[in-house]
Image (cartoon, rainbow, N blue to C red; front, side, top):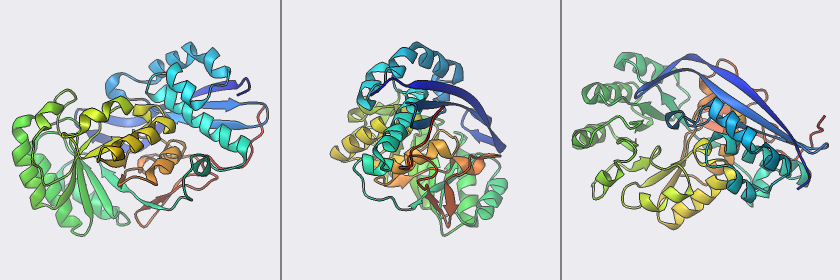
Length: 337
């Protein structure tokens, strides 16, 4: 690949309302946007990092600065995996390389990746932790949602009341819950029993990272998904026997290139695949939408919660998400300065 110009920008994506999960409260997402150009074409990528690993904007900027010469040299996407570790910085560069390569080839990214033409995907709509009545009211306001994922906090009685209130408000929807590492081993039996009563179809990351061994041999009628426990390709094999589903997020694994490899390996080992997001704009969702075409569960609702998204942006209609070629990764060549 020819030598590239590398532009890095920092952006604050403000949320319409604060968003609470176990141990954290967010009012904005800080991201880096990388643009790569060759004088004729360009490609863009957005990275938000992994907050619970300290992969924030200063960390991502330091990584990008340290790898600036190697990135400007025009590495392949496979070479990039050896230049930068998994995380938000590599995600931004990897996605920029995908779009740049698609523009050069005159084909959309999905075709470049050897996939069939994309289709709209049913996505979850995530509810941040709040009082049960408030969460039930939010679930009712999201009338277009056909799948809802509920953020829990580890307060067992309150969490089960939250789930029951939402189920009563929306008896017809698919429900999943995300523990975000908030529960203890001793709470699992009661948590799972309570979720079964409310017809919950997914339990994501109930235990903290490092506690995965406690899930071995657990007989759960609800599929368990690993999120924080599964960062990159090297974590897939250890998930067998502990999780049923691998939640792939491009900010965790370092881009679409590794995400596709993870999905392939997970399926080879008999695991289901989920695509999620760490928050972000449509520029972050669009590469994940390509991966989502081969996933069992899709959670790409990040832009819904932003005060302002990019234009053009991904579309949410009747519970589905759609990312057109004008959002990211289309075949249109882009002139660069």
